Image (cartoon, rainbow, N blue to C red; front, side, top):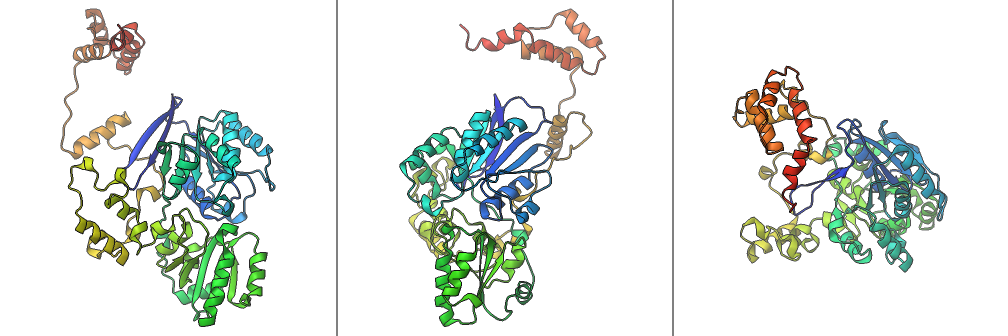
Amino acid sequence: MKRFCYMYERENTPLQEGILQLGSPTLSSKIKIAHVVGRLSLGGLELEVIRLLNRLDPERYAATIIATESITPTARELVGKHIKLVALNKRAGMQWHVVREIAEWCRSQRITILHSHNWTTFLYSVLAGTRAGVPILIHGEHGRETHDYQPNLKQRLACQWLARRCEFITAVSEDIIPLLASMWKIPSRKIVKMPIGVALHEFDFTADRHVAKRSLGLPENAPVLGTIIGNFRPVKDLPTMLRAFQLLQREVPQAVLAVVGGGNLHVAEQQATDLGIASSVRFLGERRDVPRVLAAFDLYVNSSLYEGMSNAILEAMAAGVPVVATQVGGTPAIVPHDAKNSPLFRFVSGEVPELLMPPKSSGMPALTADEIELIRVWIDAGPNWPDEFAGGTAPAKVHWSLKPLERPAKPGAETNPIDAFIHAKLAENNLVPSPEADRKTLIRRLYFDLIGLPPTPEEVAAFAADTDGNAYEKIVDRLLASPRYGERWARHWLD
């Protein structure tokens, strides 16, 4: 059997925990994970992967990031020292040697889980993982490129074939799920929605806005519009943003547009020149100090043709910067004032019967029409939440999924860690375990539990006289290896 632990939280269900068996590793063995991306830069997808792997316990996991293209120096600086980096330097177009190189790496490192991201790595990773015999293949969909809106028949058939070989397909926003289910022909049980999270406390940046603007070389008294683009690609539609800014400048001539991101800027710089706004558009390049950059923005703008769930928009909201964005993809789900696109309203209104809140199985009464309308009005109006019900400020509450994984300290003095944790919980609830059984009682319990037969008088006497500290374990091992054990438990299905 294969064992692989995964945990995820859906919007409408409590935390789910599942276990698949990945061999029978000891507690000290490491699960070896490899994530495959295209170009490892400071884009949203790539930052998600870096943050996830940086927070894994290196004592339990051995992580690798494979970039089919290149790795930028700024991205390399963010990756933890315990994470291996591999750059395959793929050129444009299909490069079949990438499949061979990923497979060879997986084989040499004995990778347990291979996780691809978006179409650009999907084909390479699944073919390589299948070739190398990787036990678990997972694919993540974070959004679509411009040319992906109407994928051709060949690509759709390829995705269907590849998806069938994956244990799970993850999606960052709800709008991607119907697309995957219908075009890739995969059952909904294989699709796991995993929204992006932002560490709110990292964006509690208190620097004066004038100081922040000055540190970036921006005019202190001018309104600054800003955007953060990990890598300039057609789907980000920067030309539309530049044309919109040109219109804004007619009304607010002192306004400045700050563009943060890496990649080929020549086309955007030339367009700014052609539009006559080059002196008011500042291309700041890739930056790691995102909280400081956001502190300099008076308004955050996003002109993408598609977003799964934008890291940059979430970070701007976390920093308290107003956002103006195109209504595409998963963006409406994170923007207030729009109940019709709110997952919460869709669930409570019964628009999605299987996700009705509260669920019928809960025994709670369904919401009345007036209550549902009140929620709609509340969402469209803000939504605002009174401070007295907030349970603390955002920086004071750090969600468990954003905390680094830690091995808990063993409570008490018990040698066996399982006993230690059980006894600690019993003590919390003022429960006292029964006294330890004498040896004659203990051996009788073992025999009846495991093989359904009593021990012989000689076996009882031998156990009572055995001073070995592992006497109990030796009897358990012997009984588990006995044919009587198989007979006892096989009786349920044997004639």
